[in-house]
Length: 334
Image 1 (tube, helix red, strand yellow):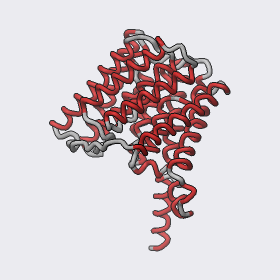
Image 2 (cartoon, one colour):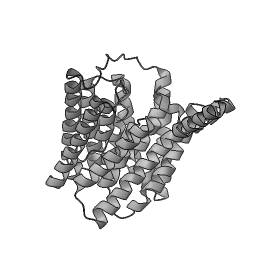
Image 3 (cartoon, one colour):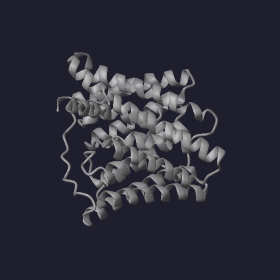
Image 4 (cartoon, helix red, strand yellow):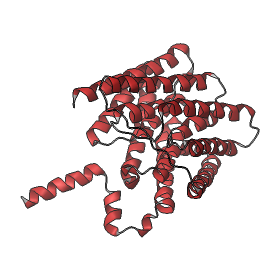
């Protein structure tokens, strides 16, 4: 691994530990913002533009989403599922009006509704953490630790984009109703909604690798849950040690596979916010939710049933397995 990349990983670990350490020291869990990990992966570790958004928009949109989520929890008398849909709709409207693709905004808006968070500490933490990540990205670029990101190009949304987001909202509402009615709340964790929107709206290569995305999400949910249950409940380790183990494991997986997926980073830290009761079921429920969201994205929006058989097999095969098979093939031919 090159020296510059090692620095990016070390700085990222330090920022995560600062966030978790502050939350542990003050006793305010609202400071622990899982989507900060996704921002760190997208803005610091990945050496290219991940989201089509300017720096000031990152801070503004994430902060607005956090404030909107708190306001929905405080003042909306509507049913829980409707409030979740309101939060999702607000995030989608902000992205359409700003012409940005900062999909993690969904998590910033939905998370307080999911966890019934009312404290003003949450939006303050989101603003502070977003500002810190943006500032560190600027410093890294000026110190040539990471490449400079080119200017973003915005495209005016049309009727197709409006209909797409409305369709996303309908499916999120249906899955949320199913999750609440079956008492499987972890099926609709915010990073899963972010994954759904990313796979529908993004043009990145991961949208054609559904199996790999599913494995990333399942692994992240399992890692976060196992470290939280064993480290916190049984070994009584500090939250910073648990966070270090989770982040280091994730970064190792990213580097080992050569692929990065920002929502997985956020999903891995969700267990640190949740109560102990029923936490052991999180990996299973998150896996079911991920499978549902990914399947809908592939079938309804990408219409994978129209693909050729070879393309379906290629997309369904994880990258590491595909590379292993290619190596075996080359050895047999030589």
